[in-house]
Amino acid sequence: MSQLIQLGSNGQASIVADTWTRVVPPAPAEESVRKQAGKVVLFKLTGEQTYSPEQIANTQIPATGKILVPLAVWQARKAELQARLAAGELGIVLATNETAETLQAEFADLNTLPIIAIYVERFADGRIFTLGNWLRTRYGFKNELRAIGDVLRDQLFFHKRAGFTSFLIRADRSAEDALASLNDFSQPYQGAVGDVPVWRRIQRA
Image (tube, rainbow, N blue to C red; front, side, top):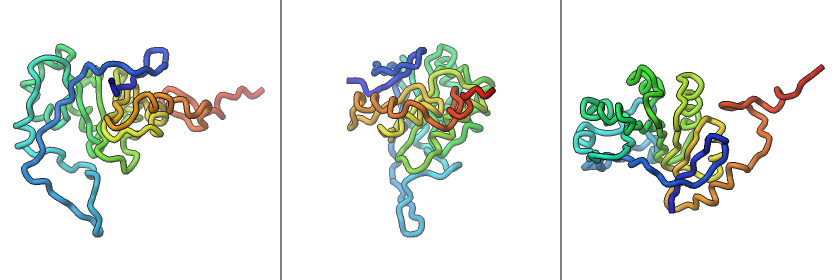
């Protein structure tokens, strides 16, 4: 069963088939273990290189079909991927340690991308919400914005309010259960992408 939840043009969510293939670079030859204050660091910091040149060069890219590639792979192999972009068959995966500014610098108009996915390796902070919000409000991205990776049920409502329109649920979780979480709250107090705070909807005489 598909694990992809997608919002329709009417805002209604449903579980749909995933037509995009996510391209993942091979694992590094030696997994480095970094420690900070005696604890293993479980997430990458902003600006840190996500993949090594060897991983990028050895990444296997399907010859046909719609593909989601990491930003680093696009940057290193864009000559090879330009035709896929022109055909509407290429989307970008942005990791939470990367920035919307870096992505925007690669494309004169982000809307040439049919989809941008933001990948959370392990949820530890709210960077995915900031990235989603900025892509919608600062950079005017209008197409599909997808959350992938460590996407949890109780976060979907807030992902939606940050501008996400699809959510790839982890294989070990129930997409049907996650679907229900989009209706956890009927009247959020705070403002969000495409919405206004409830306190600003009141018409005063």
